[in-house]
Length: 150
Image (tube, rainbow, N blue to C red; front, side, top):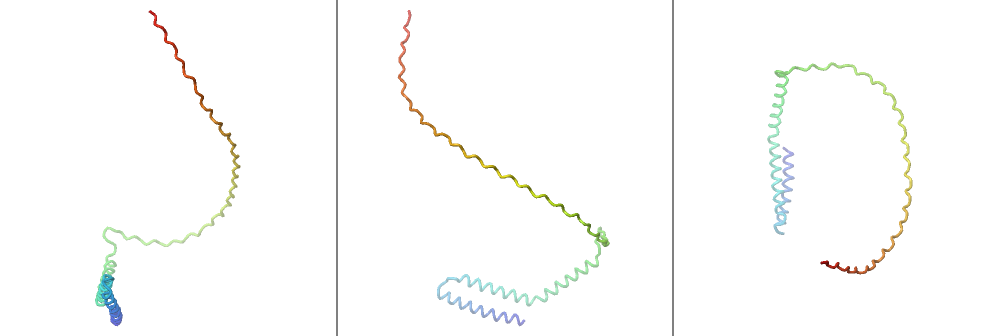
């Protein structure tokens, strides 16, 4: 209980500091009001949880220990369940001595791959010559039409 009261004294001191902070914030405006209210609510919940753990802790511990002891007694008395067979314990056997493993053989070293030969330099292709300009072709001559024969 002394720990609870010392914690409560420290908490009230912190709460007083929060109230001073809230008064300063009220003088300056509403900035940060939500954060202060959240901190106050969180601290109140923490106090309630600690108080519940202090007052109900012994009752919870006794109920859990009685339940655990009842379960242990029930499983020890029950033995194997209906339809199941008890498995016999394995009999200890002598561990065989490890056999000597042969030494690994030396692995051959990899051979070096030959370096690729140098590629020949490309040959120079001649530059294309200029295409000759087109010359004008003479106009086709008119061929006479064959005369009509009677």
